[in-house]
Image (tube, rainbow, N blue to C red; front, top):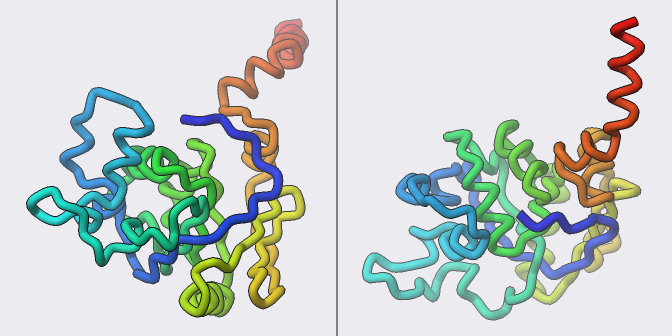
Length: 201
């Protein structure tokens, strides 16, 4: 996984206005047998059964195959994103494709944490704000959304409307500094060792 630091991300968005998208739709179960952690492999198979026809050709009707959305690093998804199996591979696929932010009105808890652990920021917004985002993108696929992690705000730049989003303080610190859990422990090794010495006295 790419340990990219987060600050303010401004991007066009890929709209996926479907509710209850589960992890098997994000990355089908047959890819769980893969022996690689290569980001490109999982990214290439994100939404595999929607992106490709049965004969392996691209499904031109699926949004990821629409050149209008090339270069977008924000996915805007319907309510209850990432439900079903707890497979971390779903977060690997989202990160491997190049998405840095997923916006939805509700995430399955385990998938939400898997995204955070793989340097993808899940942003929870109100259903009203989400509906407005989908409408703005439909009107103009080139509109941008700004996600400001330090301030914990997301802004629809087409309308100027912003919302505040919540995030665990520890995870926010890790994303802003490009740290995974092990990096954080190593960075705080001296403090940990000092605490252990005090406990053993």
